[in-house]
Amino acid sequence: MLDFFCMKCGVRLHTDEIALYRKLINRGARKYSCLNCQAEYLNVSREDLEKLIEYYHRTGVCSLFAKWDDETRQ
Ligand SMILES: [Zn+2]
Image 1 (cartoon, rainbow, N blue to C red):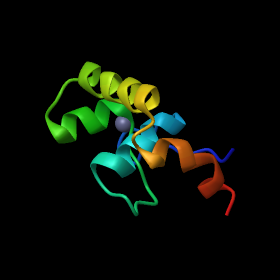
Image 2: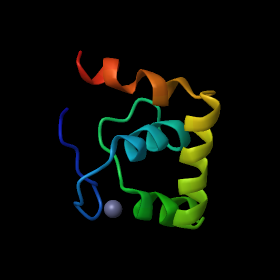
Image 3: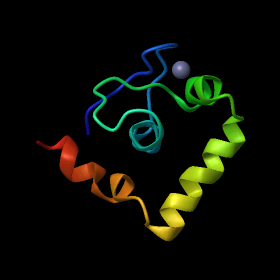
Image 4: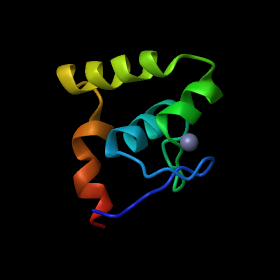
């Protein structure tokens, strides 16, 4: 697994944070931001985003979350 860091504050990113960034902000992005910075950008709370991640995992509706591992190996 490659390491990615938040382009704003520099913290190491979890794959869920990257998936959410691509889902909510920019699907073709090569740079990402952490949950805190995404929440700030979207003007929502970090909690809202965590619930959203949980929701995507539970329902499996978002292919970005399921396909992430394959895409990073390319
Ligand atoms: Zn950040």
